[in-house]
Image 1: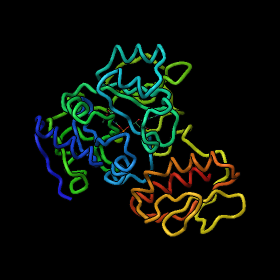
Image 2 (image 1 turned 135 degrees about the vertical axis):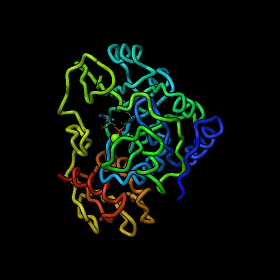
Image 3 (image 1 turned 180 degrees about the horizontal axis):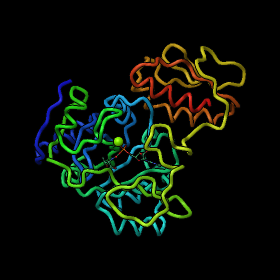
Image 4 (image 1 turned 180 degrees about the vertical axis):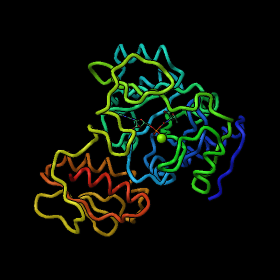
Length: 301
Ligand code: TXA
Ligand code: MG
């Protein structure tokens, strides 16, 4: 794939919106760092973010929306969360709030969690893109896994060249630091990640998941999970992959993007089934398969 870098104009935003509606991830500046944005309602598109970043694990992603009204359709804002949103949005603040039922967000975005990180960015390029796409955009920082967050289009190009179709160049990002993350999920506000804003909330280290897999409350099924199953035993709900079919199949054709896109849905489905145990067919440990296997090992632990 060839990666093109284009200046921020009406035409480049229209092109980026077309690519995103077609299920591709596109790099775009925000006031904090460049984000790699994909349609948050399309699980396959979000799986492509992980594929492009080469990330060996899943992390819940921040969902960007153009205004508070759009955020309130997706998340459940109590008074304290709403007060922070009123004060700091649009801006470099991410609020983690309970996810509303039927919000239409793909489960891979929150990595199966019942909460969601929401942000109304101020940058004109990201604002224009959100309005052109008309859907919420999931966007982690636009760097390859393990790299430094990009504050210029050149940083994105160096990190993701050949892995994404388009980079919108809006110059250096004004803040240069990832957003402040505050959890407002009940009880006191918790600071999950310090950032450009000074906010009076207790620093929370248990819920801080900057390092891959650090999240204490990461979604795990309530039932025992057996991995590398080639067939189901009695009382097992088998999640198949490729030719190993089961009660459900991550991807009958063995496509890892499809499997990543369906993973959290099928884990929830298996958890909700009548059967007391879960088994999962082997998934090749390459590319996105590494992130899938990381999640499965945690589910089984
Ligand atoms: O400034 C930013 O926040 C940039 C721009 C692109 O918006 N984005 C960014 O995303 O830094 P990322 O994926 O690199 O970092 C997102 C952080 C991760 O530490 C993730 O675990 C946390 O947000 N996060 C997202 N949803 C969460 C949730 N439901 N609960 C707890 N933490 C969450
Ligand atoms: Mg990052």
